[in-house]
Image 1: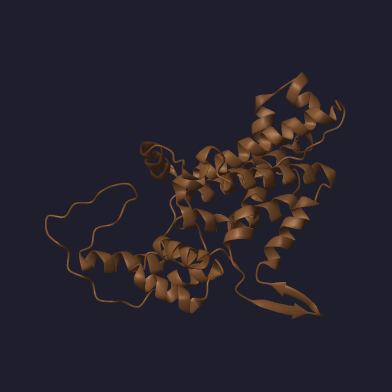
Image 2: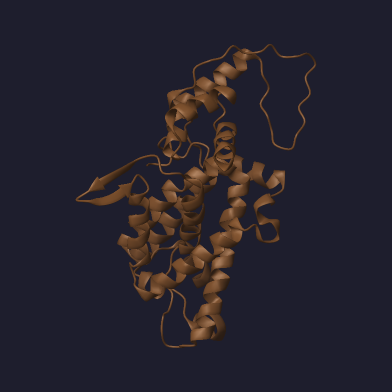
Amino acid sequence: MNGGPSGFNNAPVARTFIIASAIFSVFMGIKGGSNKLGLSYQDILRNPRLWKLILSVFSFSSTSEMIFGLYLLYYFRVFERQIGSNKYSVFTLFSVIVSLLFEVFAVTLLQDPLANLLTSGPYGLIFASFVPFYFDIPVSTRFQFHGVRFSDKSVIYLAGVLLLLSSWKRSILPGICGILAGSLYRLSLFGIRKAKFPEFIASFFSRHSWPSRPSTGSLRGETSRNVAGSAPSYAGRHVQRTHPAPMAPSTEPSEDAIATLASMGFDRNSARQALVQARNDVNTATNILLEAQSH
């Protein structure tokens, strides 16, 4: 499982977050400040420092944590492709803030002014993403190794366990807080799953994020849609035509689009049928497959 085609096509939020996390982690490692990160009772209540709070959200404290953490963030970009960059931005912000609040509450209860209780890094977002990973990404293949059953999702779970135990108690607590944040998002606390940022904020972010080269399948799909004369669809926006567009003939879905849905755990034949029904639109096809599973 690799979260779809390689690269960050249709995942600008995940790309920006991963690059920022990598830059902060490497910078703090070069400066020798990684051991100064992490949150304690004193950092939060007695001598709060905003810079340390921000760095602790983005920067990993060791190389091994950075490798596993960035790998998981890279894989979980699949959720941005599923729900769109706007809603994924809300999910990211909600996960970071809520998990941080849980961490503050836990540190306050423990009240140990000398211990550096929490390791640094985006544990909140990473482990919040395991909630939709568990519920929304189905298992596509199963296999046995020395009598032990595994699935194609086992590698992601293994990476998560290694990251959770990387700093023992200091990493377990942020991981649990992240899972709680992801659970609250799934329960749609205060209707958070329907929340979206204003359109001008999303447009500004898309224009000023690092560019990514679209995949060949996206270019083919885009070209075929333009030739067919169909207008793109926008959520919540009514598109008017001066004349009805001609119906495009049924075309074979691109392999990249099929691979994207297959990487989410869907059967290739079902993915192909959904893409034909959705006219090769991956987001629409994903919704069709998820609705079919819910019935």
